[in-house]
Length: 379
Image 1 (cartoon, rainbow, N blue to C red):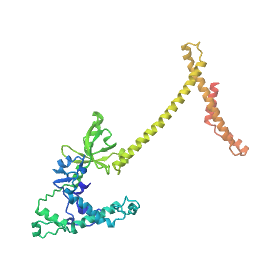
Image 2: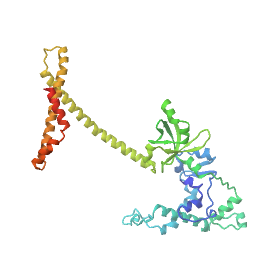
Image 3: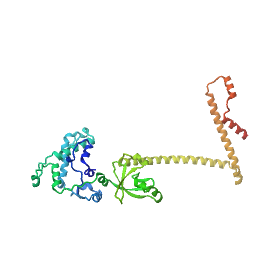
Image 4: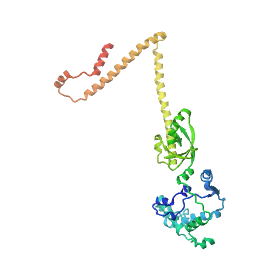
């Protein structure tokens, strides 16, 4: 974020926080030729992309030699000294001492308000801070350059070897984003468990090809702060294309990568916990089924007539099946009749003469009719 901010239009950047400045107040929206980093800052970071994309050089400061980078180190201290008196909750040097006040309890500023204060301090420092110990060169003395940061900057760009190189903020941000191999599948371009699509994928029918010939890898860049979009770069044209979330992954919209990973891990944990519970349910279910089958096998052994041949047993299956159906129908009919009787007992008594008159014209219950007809056939 800090590197991307170097090429940001500072007038627009300050306007986001309600601070009105001119371009001349902070004329810095360029990349340097050389980037000097503390050793810890770029350890393990892939700086080759910066070098290749913007023709930059990256140098690391020597370890344990803070005195070689005094201007930068001191500027951090200057900012703190300027804003410290105005910030409730500022953690002072006695924070860890016994009996010292817990300054965190005094905090009142939001992150946006704190950023606004820092920006105002930087603008003030650049324009107003007089560097009384700054040793001016003879040319500066001749040109009557006031030793203030902004005046020194403007004079140096004009009269010394300043090379301001402008690059679009979006391009710089893209090359600073993490990059990872995504998988093109028939469901979409898969990255971090989410599926994306882009115009090139649709035009070239990537997903249909993946279904027929199998998946393949393609590099994507992404912003961990918001995974709504990822970025695909065409290796031939070097054009950057935005990939959007597919409908099945829209639940991750407006979410950071850390939040997404947390959600995915929580769902995995829930799944495994449910698997254990489901396994126990499956075992109980199988045990119950086996018990029913075991009892049926025992009953068959007891009732089976061993004197009958296999052919005789097979021929009797149809008769047994008919008997079982008849028994089941009668059981169901008895249940239905019991429910009907119970329901009739709950009806409020009415005039019996009216009932007799109504019964003469009442429509016969079709279910009772069919059951009686079936019983007569069975008899």
